[in-house]
Image 1 (cartoon, rainbow, N blue to C red):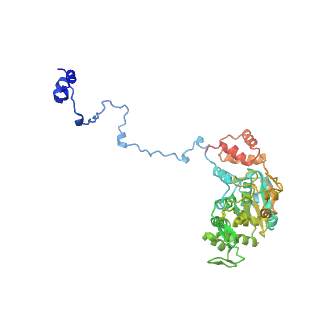
Image 2: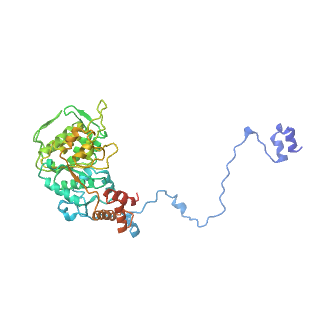
Image 3: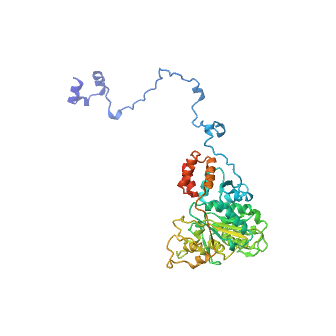
Length: 453
């Protein structure tokens, strides 16, 4: 009987598997006793690779972390030198060098002698520029010389006669102009308080605040403490010769008359709850002393005249002049308080307000500027803000760079090798024309577009 016939008749179902093996040559196994398949044994290849290195087995496996980039010092070929940042060789920004002949020239800020850049900080747009440039520097413009001349004239007079507001469109160079004034005053031994781009932070509910029943204002302890530390670091040498002219009793201590002014500042830097009171007292002491002139520079000054985003316990909006530090700044800006020897330089930007900041009509009318919105008698004006804006003088910053000033900026960026465009007059004139002479657009939209990030 063949195997096929047996399968058809069903006999194979009861036949043993061994009985079918001789006839068919097939071994049948039941499902339950199936043996696992044995892995195939590896056999050595009979073919020998060509160019086989006998020393490879001696060296061991290749180290995946053995690759190291070549040091920059070893890249001596000129092709590798084109993208390296070079050191700018610029004259230092010093008072004796800032003459009318220095206009349109680029100068580097002395970093070792000027701690203001690190202590006070920088506006965001200037910080981005200095991250790409080889060293902090700026171009001295004709408006720079004019501002510094006013500083020299105001060194011996009261701040009542020198409350200047730098105005102009966004990108006209107001922040750089204010930074130059700060650097100039520090080197001329002025007591300098610089608040760069934080005036908005004082009113946008981004810092903690607490109500003070004694002054009926809201203090901002954390912000005041940081500002005291920065002021002490920048003016440490001048504060050693100043003393307190009034007595300031605090909860657990008293700063007596005649004590070093640095001791009063140390109380605010050590205990955060005392910082707003100490900062207010510091401004009063600076107003009384006559040994050093004082520079009070505030960036984004217009934010102090806008609606605050802080709320009282009843969720009502807190006015900016009900906050302790903004109120103190407004009092010095409006002349309610004054320094005996000082210059007050707020900075205001036109057409560049933040989304949460309205355009203060009270400040615009006080400066004699053209309103950007309705200004008829039916538009409400806060009498308090009108009073705080009295006496401010408008100092317009030119909206356009001259060709020589723009050429100096272009040379600084080109010498730093921060640009990826060839040095050509056609390229410079194209970028200058595209920006319409605006300094901010010339750098941001013109030069920085060529930088490979």
